[in-house]
Amino acid sequence: MPLTLFRIDERLIHGQVLVGWGTRLGLQYYVVVDDALAGSGWEQDLYRSGLPDEVTAEFVTVDEAAMRFAELDGREGPGALLTRGTRAMRKLAEQGLLDGRRVNVGGLHGGAGRERVLDYLYLGECERADLEVINHHSESVVARDLPTTRPISLDTVLGK
Image (cartoon, rainbow, N blue to C red; front, side, top):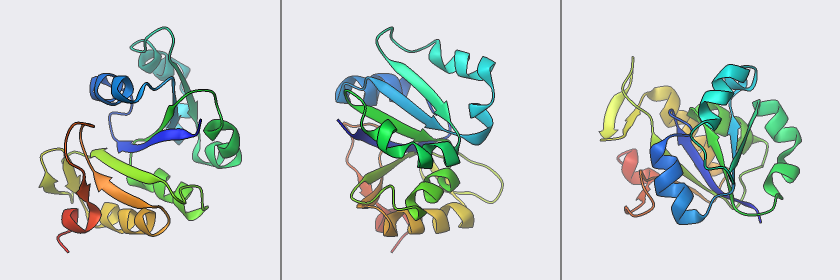
């Protein structure tokens, strides 16, 4: 079964993703695409500590995710691909890996140069540009914090 959820969320694997999305979609594995985290075993262990026993997580760099995409996408059962920010997801999109996929933006919080768009979404110029590129190379980009809430189109998010 292909990856079911493509999500941008600074918190990566956390309660909202595990309970809200994971339970609802029956996720059996997570692929976390993050260059820094891919090289930090102790941080990976922290993220894995909150997973149910039957759920796995793999941490890969952007380049590794691109090279192994068919394998990561073809695993048994539904899975999720998570990135901490828009840049990693953009790199995957630019390689044609998100064609026909819907990307969910669910948690980018306040910071330098970012403005509040939604309660859970703050964007700066870089994030806006990345999301436009991702949208161009995917089925769509939507903002959605939980699977039970209404998806908000990228055009609405960007005020178009």
